[in-house]
Length: 189
Image (tube, rainbow, N blue to C red; front, side, top):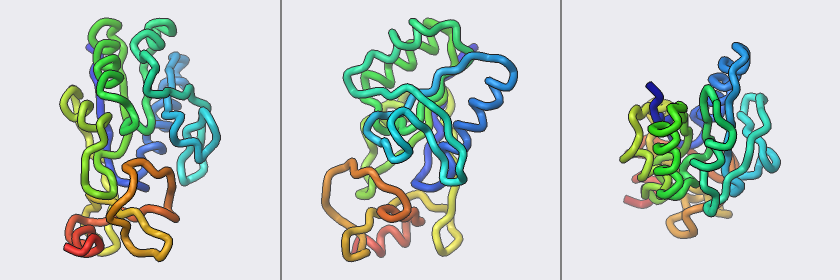
């Protein structure tokens, strides 16, 4: 029986690495998979999922207007669908992925951030938290050694930004993963 999975974490926890390893395992056994990533994040190049440790793979891009159920149905049969940057899904697209699991019996594995730099849920993440059959945390650590559950966006002065749009693409130069205590301190609480 297929399931909808959500693998979530903060920045730099290895979500894309885990996705690429899982997709490799399927492909190594001759199984067909579909890799999807948001068109919003093109740091590795358009249609590319890349990990900080140097591995990458081609992927199809999605935008908010895409009907992911129909895209998956057109490619069926598939052994699995992998979605990177799942926080950028719309709530409707999260439902479309759930429908692919239910109606096409194809497992869907989503990887993404849970919250933004202000501690607010991303719409795609909120929908997946509500819909996923299995939710798995990908763990990383704060500079103090505690589990990092939050992320701060660094402003031009290197201090934690408190305002700004929810989406600003960036990596280590822009974001730092912290435990809640250190996130609160960085945010002035």
